[in-house]
Amino acid sequence: MGKLLRSYFFWTYERGSFHFDVLVTLILLFLFVSPHFIDFKDRPVETVALNSSEVLVKEAGTSDGSSRFMFEIRADQPGGPQASQTDAERRAAILRVVEPISGAVTIERYEPVLDASGNKVVAYNAWVVR
Figure (tube, rainbow, N blue to C red):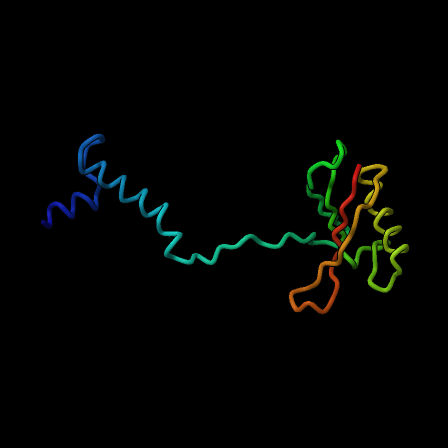
């Protein structure tokens, strides 16, 4: 029994043999089954532009044959949207930031992105059609 375990541990079996197939099957089982039982704490990170001068752009599909994009603009960006602005001022600020990047666009909607505590606006997500 010790010799069998040692040969499994050091992987001494020829490719295509029964024991080789058993080892490969055990490895594949671990890879595919273990995430269901072991919480590896891997979650997608929230993507927020790191610097105030960065704008994060994501594709948001199409609308009536036009391209839709979601722009994330940080609230501390100079000239960008601020929480203290009115709706019209905020839309104009979003357009000032977005149009140099993508050309003439139309804002469909926008929404604030709050920090982890939910108290402070850190960015704005704006859906635009080009």
